Length: 403
Ligand code: TRP
Ligand code: SF4
Image (cartoon, rainbow, N blue to C red; front, side):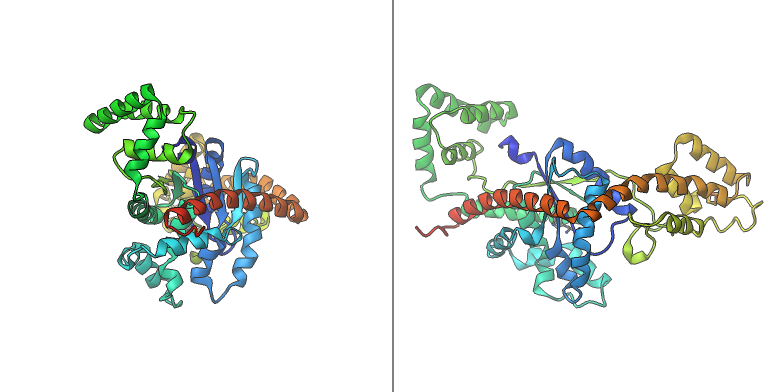
């Protein structure tokens, strides 16, 4: 497969409230790493937010800009990654519509998040067309950039798997032109005798032995052909692997290997549990929130020993403290030589040190909204160019170019 394509990474985030330390440690730090290694597309998934917030859209409008500012403030670099808002690239919607024609309803209904979320958000009416179709929208988000890798949390792996199935079905349905074989034969002829012979023998060897190295050699051979156009190159690549043309490549889920950020109460940090520290939290509030965090209930008095494993503060030390400090906590807690207030202080210090530069950068962006708008305009433009290219191809293979 074309290497420039599989090097694309795409991920989105819903604008449904302020970002917190859970987003930073669970998602954004990973994005920051990825932006150096891949061509990254990161977008604000405002249409996705609408699938559950359609009756409360003002929260979305509020969160969109804050979210972008927070991304920039934590170190997502618009020089390296494309940042955009989903609804500013309406091509996503057209691809969703086109894909919807061949998407079996049962595939959507059996995605685990569909029933899970309906159950979890019982105060909302989620028996809507939009909500059922939201994984399909996600597939369109991914496929329109031909992203090779999609960083997601575990709960979203099923969506990427669904996207793979859709892509396979699409390629199967539309990847084979009626005169495919004939066009391939013509393309081989255009390669010239020597290359044509080599191509045929490589193809034979690959199909008989499945040797990946042979495949790579053949791919290079095809790429190197001077007088063969892109369409023919793709046909030759598809023919090589014994299948139809790949129009929409299958993405892979890139599981984020980060520690789960605990919340103030020891559960996962999440807005709905009211246990977060937001990226914009003032130092006073950070201090107050940590000071009032629950600890091991066994430590009623200062002289009662405790067990770090039973304490959410320990989970914070595991993220923020070095080995030496961690040993200090473990010993000090178990033999009651430190108090919980002592124990919490280094956590407070670490969080404040982490947030200070982020908040400083956020403030500069807040003061210069024009610069954020410019970054976004540029990102949307780049995204649209890439999206249009794919859509053009999709319309063509689906026979929608009436000329
Ligand atoms: N569905 C994701 C979420 O709820 C956000 C999202 C939308 C996304 N489109 C995406 C993630 C495409 C990865 C790729 O968190
Ligand atoms: Fe928790 Fe630290 Fe108190 Fe032990 S000493 S209970 S780890 S806060």
